[in-house]
Image 1 (cartoon, helix red, strand yellow):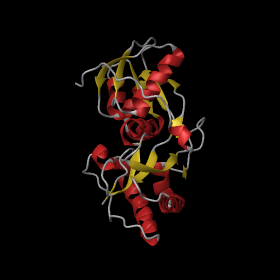
Image 2 (tube, one colour):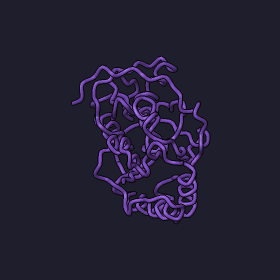
Image 3 (spheres, one colour):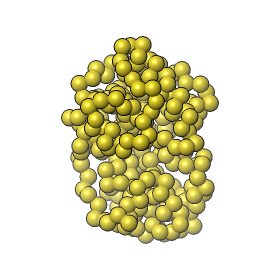
Image 4 (cartoon, one colour):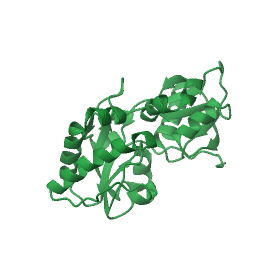
Length: 246
């Protein structure tokens, strides 16, 4: 069996994620749900989402819609208390280089299956009329932000939770500016394997978030979990970017 919380896990907050998992794990066991001792940081998250022995994972909305809706059980969305977002929602920031007054259309994309980096970006482009021309797939939001900061791309769309962490730990944020924010959608969603009852998971996660010591809670920024209606997750699938990874 496997448990993984990969989406906002960084070296700087690894211990806080471990503390959160320890509380969730003990809460699950107290409710009769078997849970591994430690988080798995070796298995690729896409592989982990598809495993039949998945105890707990996190998934963003686009890969859930595109590949995993019939393969996992949704538990609840994460709520990070973002200003301007509803309970259990998040959004992304469109960024440009700080000293670039008129950014071009070269767009750095973290992953074609990223809700925050690609789906939100296309919606923002349609709403604002600002064109996006994907020129690279970077592999992460941090790498996309650095591509803009270094002048290798003009624009990138960065998950607001990730941006908040990068502001704390990555000097590259000082070399970019926020052009605007995207519309909001369901926050990073806790999932378990298909067929599992989500109720004890919701109870255990909610209790763990409430019990997390202030030092760890401050590092993670996770305030609560929210059970959103199924309709909140339904969005049209975006088109694929015409770009070659490099």
